[in-house]
Every structure is written in structure tokens, then in C-alpha cells.
Length: 351
Image 1 (spheres, rainbow, N blue to C red):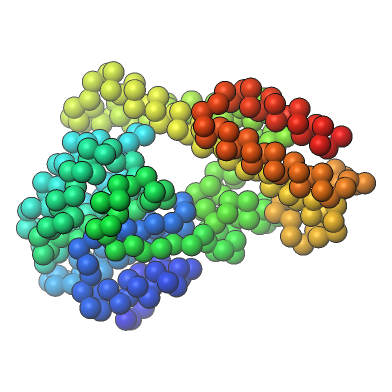
Image 2: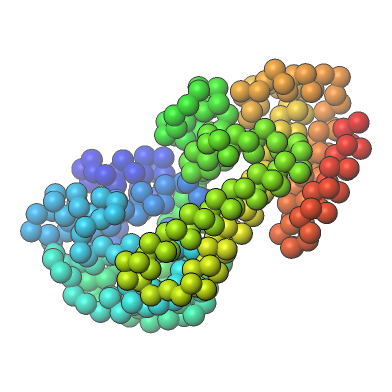
């Protein structure tokens, strides 16, 4: 296969490159499940793969490929569905994917349907999609993108060919970031290969979160503020759509916005705890003389001061306590009580 946008998109995902390259050579399957961590490049690779499929049989393959690569894409045979709120709307899945899949291509020989964050489809939508996955028209290809494939119905996942994505290496994340070199190097490692998360950590909100991860009240405040911002942004987006003709009641808009805000709040709180665990891990590394393994590379001086005369097993135990709290929050325990209890336990371990 010649050098294409697909090859560039799969630069850091060699397994996916081989699999998708072979699929284009022999003829792509009707359904794929792109699964792997957030920020690993699933979205870019799906767009590049869809562009190659749509270029096949097109009157002008280069132009078809170019239009498919635009975001949003003007290509009439590429349908891209992203969740507006906490979940995909059932009617959008039915209208834009299930029913639309029965229409022949507007141009060329293929149609491609991409469902981003597929795990956010309700069971009703997933069950409705089953028939399309089982008996699709020959010209239809469906790409499901998921960071949490375990939340998909087994009947849906089993009907798709899986394409696995690994977390991006820090160097690949760094190449997509702008900012002070030391800070970029740190967030690239703290993000665990998630480019979107690394970009968030370089915002004012992300920096406040990093600065306050050892103060549970400040961590909770940061999560609440970010959640409120997400709720307001979602509300405005939904109101704009309503003005453009999308049918949504004021109640639906308010509920969807609240769900988006709650979800973002939960994500940021979990990220805060993950950052706290990384800090204590770095403390243990510095106390043991292994500075080269530190993730918070832009705060080595502060780590050195905190690690002075510190017994390495103590911060290692702190990491265990933080991870235990993350698991507790997954069980819907009181966030304030869990974080307050964590602060007391950490104080006792690190005293």
C-alpha cells in the first residue's frame, strides 16, 4: 500500500496498521470495533480508514479521500455520529445509521457509518443496530469506536472485527502538544497515552487540578468547576441545535446538560486521584534514588524536598490508599466522605 493518510494515522499503532492495510487489500469487512484507551488515535484512524474505503470506486478517488478527511466531512456517504450528551440519542442512531444504511451510495460504491463512543449507546439502540450488523447491504461499512468496549452488548461486539489500540508512547503525545518543554514532558507521561487528557492538563483548569491533588477539598472544587463548565457548554450546544430545528424540549436539554456535567465532574475527580497516585509514586522513586523514572518531571525540586528523609515504603503505601479510594468511588460511595477519609489515612502513613 502506498503512503496514505491511513499510514500516517497508524504511525504509532503498528498492529492496527497491518490489520487495516490487509483489509483494504482484500476488501474490508462490514463492521469493525476500534477498541482501546482514549486519545490513542481511534478517531483519526477511523477517518483515514473511511477515506480509503470511500475512495475505492469513486470517480475521483483523491477528491473523495480529501473530502472524507475533513472534519466535519462534506462527503455524503460518510456519516459520523458522536454523542451530544451523556448518551447517544436513540432516534439519532435509528435515523442516521439504521435507516440511512438502506440507502444506496450517493456517489461511488460505498457508504461508511462511524459511531464514536459506541459504549454510550443505550441498550435499545444497540439491540436495534443488531440487524444492520447481521445483514448489512454490501455497500455498507460500520465502524464502532469505544474506549470502554466492555459496556457494549456482547451480541454487538461479537459481530464486529476488533481492531486493538495501545496507549500512545509519551514521545508521540509530546509531539502533539504545545507549551513549556518540562511541563509538556510531564503531562505526556501523566496522561498515560491519552492526548486529549494531556491537552486538558495544559489548560488553566488542568493546571489547577494538578496543583491541588494533595488537598481533597481543592480537588473536589476543581472537579465541580470543570463539570459546571461542561454542563453549560452542552446546554448551549443543545439550545443552538434546537434553534436550528432539532426537536428537543427544555426539559430534555436541561437533563442532557446535567448528565454531561456530572460525567465530566466524575472524570476530572478520577483524574485528580490518578494524579495524586502518580505524585506519591514519584515520591517513592525519588526517595529510592530513581529520579529518572519520575512522571512529574517539571516538579523534581518539589519532589526532592518532600522526599527528603522519607522511607520509600511509605509513599508506596500512599499509592495503594489512593487506588483503593478510586475503587470505592466506582461503587458510588459519598465522594466527600471517601476523600476526607483518604486524607486522614494518608496523613497517618506519611507522618
